[in-house]
Image (cartoon, rainbow, N blue to C red; front, side, top):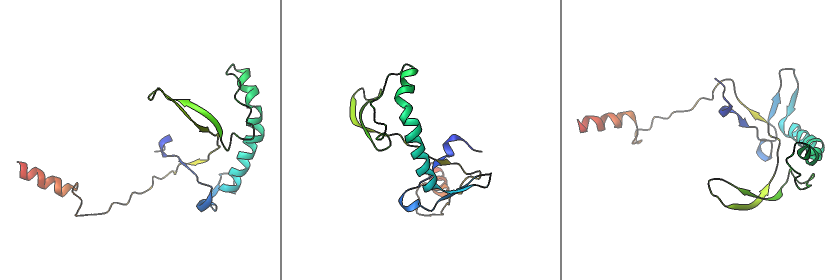
Length: 129
């Protein structure tokens, strides 16, 4: 059963440079090279037009950081739970996520030292009754 919670971001930096994705149509990519091109397209096509598009829909115009959105842009955020402004940076990224059809098996180890084992619970119930 696939749910949105089962999706995990495919890493494509440093230790994961050789991760490969193969699509149903037979196309195969190294995730690092695919993400490099997707981010380049995102920066050149999407971010270039972002100020104009946001203005058209009445959201105003963000700072013109067309070449910096993928690295970082100085900003402040106001989170309802804190009620305070926090200074920092924002960035936009394109991510590729994967959800396996088969759930990953979780290895269960039998540890008799575990105080929460079913046997320990049974012993505790027997003692208290």
